[in-house]
Length: 243
Image 1: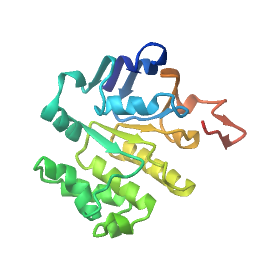
Image 2: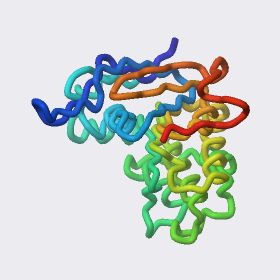
Image 3: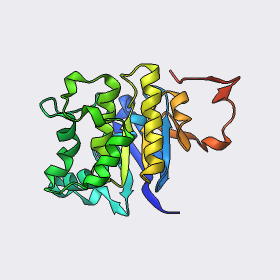
């Protein structure tokens, strides 16, 4: 197996004594290259804490995180920021586009931070894949929620990161737009050979991934390929959301 992401004994505790909260309590996880994984769980289950830790946005209480064999704990300051920028793509629920930049400028912004010349053939393919051809000169405020999220995905993929992390990427979208965005993530994984981890509470969207990892009370409680999933995830053709 070609492992992009590996967590070992990952723990994140807040507070101490009787009031201590164990947001993550021993998570061992491996993510293979060019796969699309959905991580699900109820509010407070630890899935967003896991997102922040594997994205290098927070540090664990115990355990290790490796991306392409590099331990995040060995990086700090500028090297850590450069590693995140080059190796990890982020997609957030609130898009986080720069309002004064148009779509094209937003897409190229991560590359400009590294003074890297864009691969225009790749970026053009990315723009077409995400259906943004007619929106490149538009400011984010003029776009629909679905268009903003597609622009955010394009920006996250522009640097060809080792892994793309999407935290509830459909949370601000209606059902139709949410399904479209999740479908595009799946397509990006296939066509661009991209490794994607999506945090979601919506099991209908989770089933678009290759694998579903369920977290409860800071631990992994279920880990299965979507091809072999049956009840309780789907019953009678209806999707079931974790509230």
